[in-house]
Amino acid sequence: TYTMLIKNIQNPNLINQTGTGQFKLQTYSNEVILVDSNGNFGTMGLAPPYGIFALASVLNDGSNNAGYLTNYLLTFQIGQKYSANTWFRLTFPSGFSFGAAIECYVQNSNIVLTCKPTGMM
Image (cartoon, rainbow, N blue to C red; front, side, top):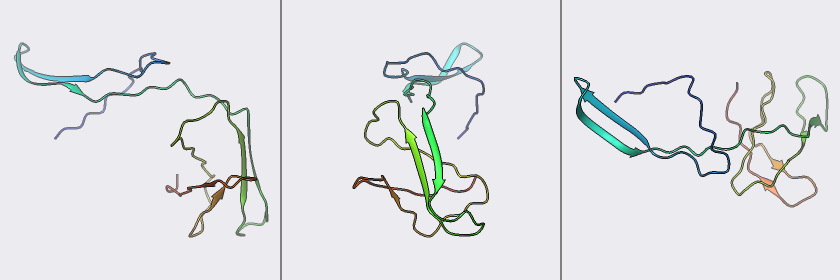
């Protein structure tokens, strides 16, 4: 098994389309003899370039003292409606740690979000 990293490839401009077609891989011997081929694997779904949130802020509702456990209130305004299974990532600056059970709620509603830490960056 070989894995190759190919750098600096610009994606096609396929906004409002379904994505790319199938990728094709072929190996040749002596530049002209086809050894093996797979012309029907992998596709890429492409999205429009990301936008900037019109409003985004974060505040804590407890203590500003170092080392204290507190809650953070993330506020952001979206520019469009998102489909089901859309997710977002909030990255905290270095030095923060998380309790055993992170809980996330949409304020003033009954919506509970699934929150999970994915590691430190």
